[in-house]
Length: 568
Image (cartoon, rainbow, N blue to C red; front, top):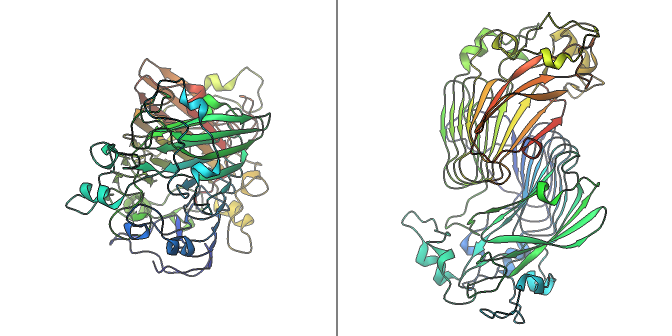
């Protein structure tokens, strides 16, 4: 993609898309602003918005400090996701990120460069807990006074605020660990293993960042994820509606400064403004990951690979990837009654998507798909693919005969009555992975056409399609089939999460053992467990089987987000 500076991008603007390596089109918009002070605004679809170009070795001096030229070129960006489930990411500059509606991921990457040593905390001296002595001031985490204080607003939905802290090193160190293919080994058997002197390597700071609207456990289900080499945090200030976290590196994981190259460096501050729904143990996760500040070659971020029609095999590489198995569906893929057309069934195959390294986004819809996240903190997204559910006529509407949820039957004949290929298999791999299930609204043609706006978009919400409830299936929520998560490791393990998103969606446990739990997904229009007169009240939508390593907590690891997501 050609990069432009000082440009206001819109998802509706006419633009050339990146080369897709021979694959077909894909669903989300990817907007990469590049250099300068950028304003990027997405549309109503899922967006991937990047404020900066990826840094390279050429952006740093030989001692690891950022070039003045690089600082001047990378400005203060504004990223706005608007609607959809968006990914917003920025690095250098004093950046503003607004997720908008949907389950968004907002990523702040190291931007205050090399932290300064606090000489008052001596190395290898047994004089108590050194973490208590840390001073979280700008002179330590941002000694050059760089523009690095970001402001992040998630908006509605279950949002994830990610802070990625990157390893850096002097040129003579990282060049020792440059592989034959040009990539750098930043791990413990590479750059991070260099500890003969202070700052033979280090973790770059993040400045002082602010989350403006956090709503965690008991609220919207927001999460904070802090990831990087040896990173830790401590609470340095707290009130009823605000908590301030100090981020630091602890090479020995013992709270005592040893002889490591950056042990107990202060890396930054995260101020969290919340609505009262904040639980430190549930809402904040730390993931240890050896993330490097650059690779050897210039590249835009991320790689984007789209599968298109047929049975695709899509494999990513070592960097961050955005991988899509299918072309986005349109109204043309459905019959007037809302059924998927026979032609569409033939066109969309069973895909295999492999993320490999990096923090990847893998997404697929139709077909019996396989997703493998690999290393990194990946997001695996399974969208509705079993079409229109069937009514269980034995559960009468508006009949007061007890809790109808107890009568639900999670059989294929209800959530996938046409027997479509829809049973997906999701494997996260290493890292803190998020398994997202997006359940989409659909309706007959005569219904959704009543709610087409002037700009051609459909209003799927309660004052549009979802408000049509005169008859059974005036609108409905599409099923997801029977999906399996193969390697879940939640609270107490790798920090994996499950997010179930859709119009009126709920879940119940239908089977449980020591290493497996099976969830039944259904719609509950009244939110009361009783079938009323709504167009799809208590439809059965699918099953999610979760194979786990024993680290699974139903209350902590699963979030339900109510969102009116349309099928096209």
